[in-house]
Image (cartoon, rainbow over all chains, first blue to last red; front, side, top):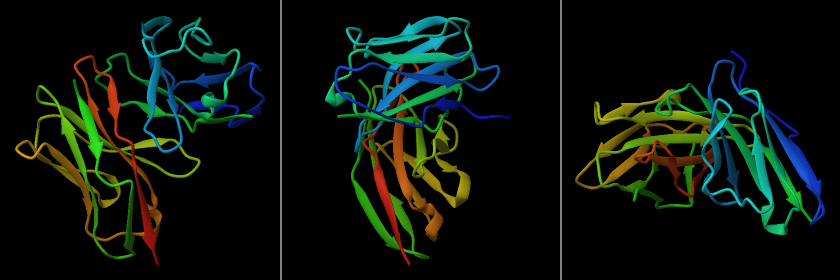
Amino acid sequence: EAGVAQSPRYKIIEKRQSVAFWCNPISGHATLYWYQQILGQGPKLLIQFQNNGVVDDSQLPKDRFSAERLKGVDSTLKIQPAKLEDSAVYLCASSRVDSYNEQFFGPGTRLTVL
Amino acid sequence: AQSVTQLDSHVSVSEGTPVLLRCNYSSSYSPSLFWYVQHPNKGLQLLLKYTSAATLVKGINGFEAEFKKSETSFHLTKPSAHMSDAAEYFCVVRDSNYQLIWGAGTKLIIKP
């Protein structure tokens, strides 16, 4: 089966600009996650969707970050405006409907904010 | 609250020698524990998981880990390192809300 797809793979922007990332989960996976991985750290969960509803967004900086999964399939994560400290790899993962199940990760989008 | 500590940020071994990546966890109940591997420019991949069955867990690529409750440890081992094992390894604990709590990672370097 096809894995989790993410685009773009790399993005370089200036601070205060906007950026959007796209994720297409594995077919049939109801749960979708966005993580932020800063260099030298483990991933940090930003938001978790089940179908098109938000399960957990407690660590999402809502003043600048937003995410949506309108049709319960693919998802976008947006940053507006970006700050230097947003430089990181943004990982998307998906799992079957039960969160107990294994999460499958995409290759990530590496964001550099100058 | 659950937490996980990876005791080494970098581990360097020679090809063909054993690998030991150390992980300690903190949990108020019987945890589920995982090891993930991240190769450069590739997605995270599950190596193995412990979910209260056998304490010695075998994973992919010859890796295994042993759950030791008395020591609150879940160390990852491999008898003989291969060049393709060079990657970053993450120890992960799942909390009561089924969220994954990640360690900071251990970079494994294989010397020829």
